[in-house]
Structures are given as structure tokens and as C-alpha cells.
Length: 239
Image (tube, rainbow, N blue to C red; front, side, top):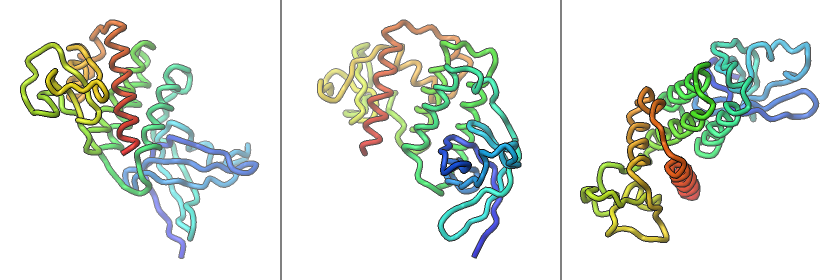
């Protein structure tokens, strides 16, 4: 039995198949993450290619067969042209797509993730965004994504003993799930961070982009944020 379906989806990955086909990874409001077979879409004469592309939001129609979903129609809803035109922005877009690809199982709908995805790409597409701030969009997406899927880091108190964080000497522990105090520090599982890193993580989880985009962080703080983000990513992926 063949079922016809319609959905609003964001295309975050594409893979070539045979001479003219593609497999599209699409995150939809209605079905979550799905893979759709786009037959002959790489041909110049294809009508489908005019309504769907990587890092775009489209209204799509597809048929559900026995083994795969096949695209039958697509209409652009939103195109993020500034992202496609900028190598720096395009790289960040691919990093965000990797998060989805690594952590999201197929057909688990989540409107909060869909809304966060569009929110992050709207910010990344903003023509006034500084190239140096592009990486902040990735952190903004990743940490709020962690919150949505149930792995929000503890930033207000020690994630291990639940005591108050009174000292400037604090650490981030992926294993414990957030900031820990000196007495709970273990050199094998935690990284020393500074107050700037804790501050920006708190602002990110408040989604206070206006303040985040105006903050100035020194090189050491940027490196620390990059390090703990990568460590937490690897830790969650391993789990």
C-alpha cells in the first residue's frame, strides 16, 4: 500500500545515488527526521530541483512505499542564500547538520528541535552577522539542542555535590553534566574554565542572542568553550 504524505521540512543532508538520483535527509515538523529518495533530481529537466535544496525549508510531498519514501513535489518556503554564498557560514551549517545526523533517530517528531533549527539558520543567514560570530551560532544551536533532548548542563550549582559555586575556580565535567566545584574536581574527567565561559553558556541557554552577539571573549575563553563543547559532544555520542 502506498501512502501520500505532505510535510514542512528542512533539508540538512544530501547524498548522490546512481547517475541522477539523491537521498535527502529532511527534518520535518510532522515526522521528525526522514530520508527521502529524490528520483532523477540531478537532471537539468527535473521539476523537483526548483523547490528543494540543501539548507532550505520546503513544503514537500512524498509517497511512502514498502521500503522507502519517494519525493513527488516540493515548494520552497525559505531559502538561506547568505549561508550558501559564504564558505564560513556554510561550514557552520554543515556542523549543525552533523549534530542532527549524529543524534536524531528517524521519525521522532519534535517541534522544539524544528523551531531551534530554523531559529539558528535565520541567525546564521542574517546579512549583518559578523563572520567571526558564526561559530557562536553553532554553540547556540548545540547547547540548546542538548537542553531539548534532555542533557542540559548544570550551570547554577555544582553538578556533582549540588553545592553553591562560590569560587572562581570552577570546572566543566561532561561526566557529571556541567560545572563542578574544586572539591569535586577530577583531572581525568573535568576541564578548568573561567567565569566568561560559564556566563556565555548561561546566556546561550536563555537564548539571549542580543547580549551574546555583543559580548567580547578573549582567545583563551574561545578555546575553552570550543574544548568543552567538543568534549560534551563526544561524551553524549558515546552514551
